[in-house]
Image 1 (cartoon, rainbow, N blue to C red):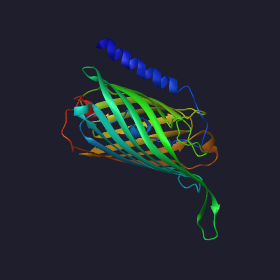
Image 2: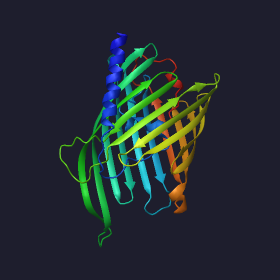
Image 3: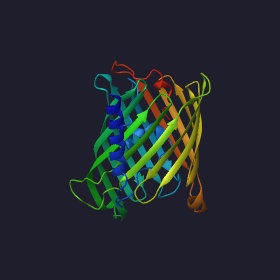
Image 4: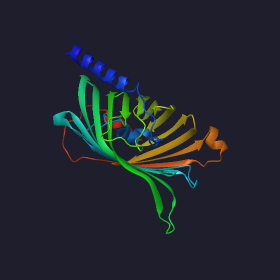
Length: 304
């Protein structure tokens, strides 16, 4: 049995690794979110719930706030674990405006959670959805936008996530180049690698270091972050990447979690005078299905 589990884990990681070695240069990028942990499902279909609660999160990010051509992203994620089937299901909806480009992305996710050891699991996920991209350029005399391109594409993603009460690590690919019809509005294939470790100092304090690597086929960005949690209720943190330094804070009150982050620009965007970026996340946890929680301590993992 142990050989089968190890062999299955190896095969899953090899498949994802092979997929991440190919690339296409099309369209624009996925939105970059500072509060990645609250939106993992959008980037990795394997990152479904780790308990028997329904998790819902809504994120609003205004990048370079104040710029006339700034970016704004709205994202909704919902995920539920089904204990009888060892499976997690989820839905993600994303709307973003990136200068003259507008995107609407809807996808359904499914993940099977394989128990590797008593308190460690390997989740293998698949997402299927649709992505609409429209590019505008100028206005008509009546003030309405001129649509230069407007196209729907099928959207497929794969991912794996290995998790225990102490850490999780994941690899995923979004916008796989498998299309029903070819058109110019298709997206880059994106690759994500991420890791977080939950170190308990005592029963109240926890330190959570981690990183996220984003590789949309032609440019790589690396986030290194550190979060500090107190009493599973309050959270403070900081993140640094090539183009920004960010601070974040969060609070949990019963089933509701609120997180806020602010990005300070560095490098080219700072020299160009771009303002900072705001991001707020609202999370809700509620129980609608009675099931068996896989890990007794997984509820300590912050949602932001």
